[in-house]
Image 1 (spheres, rainbow, N blue to C red):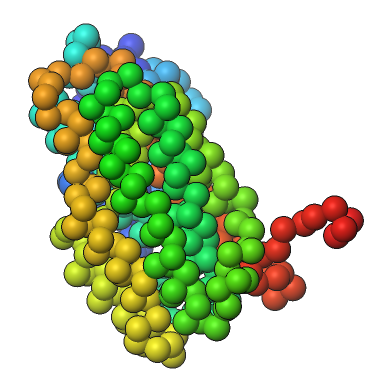
Image 2: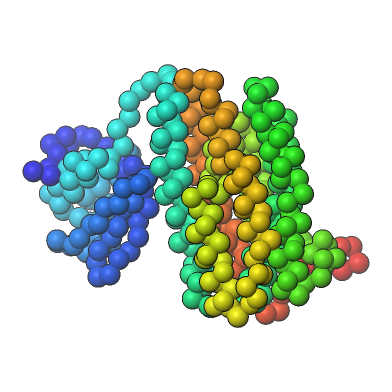
Length: 335
């Protein structure tokens, strides 16, 4: 029970999010499923050491030797993970049914959007630990991200092979083109003049995120549409987000309407159906090439991590009391 006899196999975990719980317990989140791992023997650190080798490149013997976990324990744990359906099982195929592709994408997006929300920046906001500068910084960088959206949308349009997809993205570009003004309205309510907002320069994490989306748009239309689904709010998130931002304003001692521009932007995007662009693009086809699907998923995963970097940079820059807020460009005469 819970053991595997295939000693030559090279097990690989399905993509998951690990969350540390009280004591030595761990939660493993795979798509919509949550598994709680309780300590029976050994330690959490020992399991994490072993987990890093469940990458499809190591045999059970390799894993035991490298992680300093007994072969018997490795064999049992891998067997249990297999019984729970947590090991990757490849089924070679030239194409993937659109319905299966969308189901897997949607499950992963729910997991990754939740994982983005685990970032310590949002914990700081919820606990009232974020300074006024940090809140202004998050809004400023969101303003830049929305303002620079035409760069990556334009790159995606220019490299589309399907006319229908290009037309879909042209509509998206028209929708998003002036939305940065809505975010600027929220920044202004924190006392930053509009002209300073317009002249501000984004932090590197914001530029990196935009440039990554440009690269995805050039490389894979399917991947770009998956990334849009990751970053665009869905209808069922709108009400919760509105309440959360109101509570953040209250906790920070800000006016209740300070985030109204941000919320209006979300409401307009939700009403325009931006989270459904991927489904619209695939509505007339039954299958996607497997190679294209794998590339698209990997792009989406990279963009998820780019958002972590984006939030890291917001904290790094806007919690340094010596930094300019808003950030200034460095020109020739500054040298």
